[in-house]
Image (cartoon, rainbow, N blue to C red; front, side, top):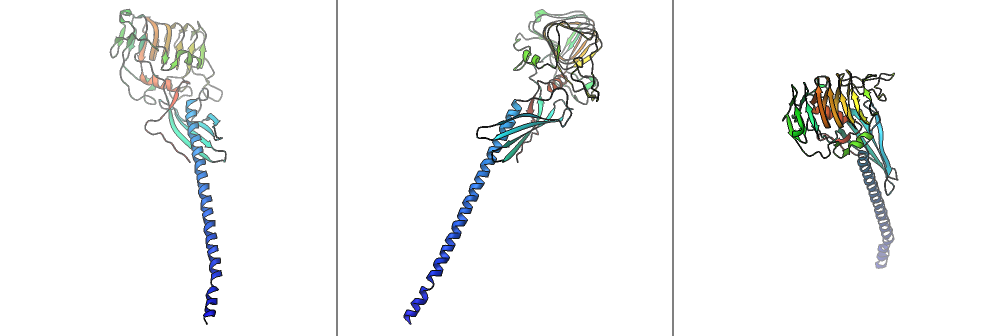
Length: 376
């Protein structure tokens, strides 16, 4: 009896052992599966982080190497800013899309995709607007040497909006600035019925450092970016008219050196064309024409007739005015002599901002209030 009971109990040993082996085998398999899954998760996480880092790097490099298509282009235009491969094999590609250029600053969507060698991708994006160059214009007219206002010349630093720009692009004025800043007011002359208005009308600033630059961008660097080059001694507006010209399809012909935009007809194809215009030496502006952009003169500039220009003007030599010319924005010149007729220089913060924001020299800046940044 006792012997039979022992035999009966010993019969449970083998099944129990097999069951334990199965349990431990299952536990081992589950452990291996969990370890494999954890490793895969870590690999995916590492790949996503590497792709995200590549995308962020691409975005930074794309903004640093900012470029844009030549001439004018419609909203929705997309172009490549930069692409490359990083150490470790990850790569990036960053593109910009123009969204809107109806306001003072042009709006862009900049997106960068990062990709690892195993095909993992991440994307980041940033909403930016073209920031105007550092604006050196602190007066309607700023001179480094002698300046003379005679006749009925009118120079005012009281900020205003040109009638044709009121509403669509400029809705309010900004702070007033001096009418004239002179490096030495003893070299400034005001005679006849000429006026210099502003806050104040005339003031002195002996520091002329960087007078012909826009922050860290020099006159020469801007000249190298010129859309239009004017030979030395050219009389603009004498034989050929300055004004907007169009391609066969009705778009603005930005290849025409006589096309200086369309400042008085907002909404027309050339109203957003703000060329950098570089005169290689002395230049004359004549006739009842108008233009807009950034005007750089590497010599003397003589303006007469009813010529109107909208945008910042830099004259390394002498600005000589005769007739009824008008400059809207601001002028910097080594010397100035506004003697005959009603020479007019009107400070306009909006004209300066919009012009500089639309030139080829403009640079993007993230929006202050509503930038967005995402990844997937």
